[in-house]
Image (cartoon, rainbow, N blue to C red):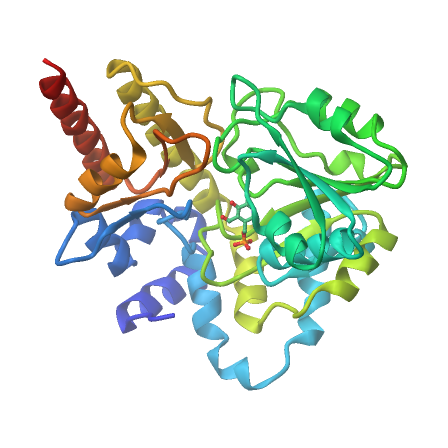
Length: 381
Ligand code: PLP
């Protein structure tokens, strides 16, 4: 991580003064030269709106924690794992033996892909969805069954349930779903889990849950002790803005946690663990990120409505919408404007996933969207 002297001084001073709560997201963006250059579309720095990152992060407290940990990096950090695990367990309202950390939730998704996919285990997932678990499971010999999302681009739970066979080992639910952004309500997930055979693990990936605002959308952590096999995954890469730091965790019954812990490849590094602990306490930063991203999400959906473009109901820090043209054309148009947008998600050949960046980036995106629609209208006339 490339912290300037000014960043270090400002972040450390703020923490020392106990004024973390007073540090706004604007200040965090101010501390981040990359975000500033991206926001202004300066000198070749593209606006990265393709990876579902949070450009405001890491929080000032997390930055200070990383900076203060450099001298300790010559030591193995194993003694600190319980501190983070205990903190996560308190946050989730479970005991510490129900939490395991990973180098990003991606590592834990892979571990679950291996555990459930080896020996030709069958895994069911939506199409389209986040593919880290299915892709990894495929390499380990899994049989994958993809079930198309419904007309609202939500997981089709009845169809997923109908796809379960006696060879099925796991069902992956991404809630909110990447790339569609749609989310399942708590009741629907609960009855789905209760309908699963006892040997099937329901894996619920809540990477984007902090951005959900639909009243019935909430964590499935309450289902881990209901007798069915349930794993919930969370990450520091999204609302915490720490995608480059690599820290995530899973919540499940102790025997499932032990299986995941045995299958993962690494443990988080000292910077990840200390930054995660600091970020968990930086409530004002997290609230500020959420309100800014939700406000920008509303601006984007209003812009799409004005242009008559369809979109899936967004509950993450991104919006999946129909550009009305082959995606490659839209991608190239945006690239000319120095904006990188999400990739192609078959079979949605004209749909684009746009990550919600900083406010100036959203301005630039909306201007680009309007220009693209204008050009299409002119061609059609
Ligand atoms: N889960 C979903 C749904 C994601 O979209 C991503 C990354 O984009 C991840 C998990 C991976 O997160 P991490 O950075 O914690 O590995």
